[in-house]
Image 1 (cartoon, one colour):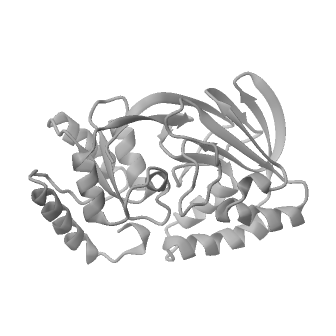
Image 2 (cartoon, rainbow, N blue to C red):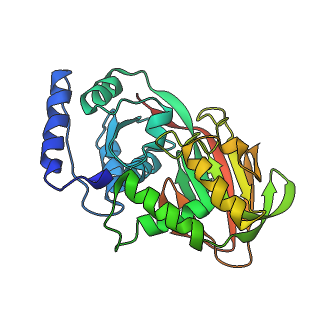
Length: 284
């Protein structure tokens, strides 16, 4: 049901998946997730049963759960994008047409991509601290009924007025600095989704993460510049800087809220970061 679809689409999507796979000459089991964390459990179970491929049909959160279960294993991940952002799918140029995405995954020669880790949580596309984590928490709150890209954009505009940046201490491969940051992005892929490229130079298979810092010099500049992070031109935003890293840490004076692939997480006062080169096999 990712991306604001109605529950009636679930059975139809399951049947489309079965039909597309049978057309290719393969057989498959199709499961519908019932709760947070269920996709991870289903993927682990599929690996134990000897599946040669696990495909995730959904948004970035579903993709994250399945990828976390398949990381450090030889069973590849296939993606059928159906969420509000579809960041990793966009970077991998996976078709939004389900039958095409399924056929491509079934026929692909799997390749390895990197996996990021922050505070013990794995991510495959983008993790972050600050403004984007603040919006992700609001977007995923139980009371938020407006899903999809427009719902995310509405919350983002409201957050521009209410969000207050914090001061962070960074250690990036041994290089230390301090920053009053609007956001700190930790990117494996280049974009949040919908071609909003937070880290234009990031690639998913270079063995590195791109850490992006956007500092606030004034509230007016933040109001004017932050939308560029989501509409293109991130590198032209005032206070933007980035570095390619293998490991590091983000520290503040209190607990830090962050997100992994759009899913909000409450962390401690120090978040450890590292990359796991080539830890996930992808079929697309």
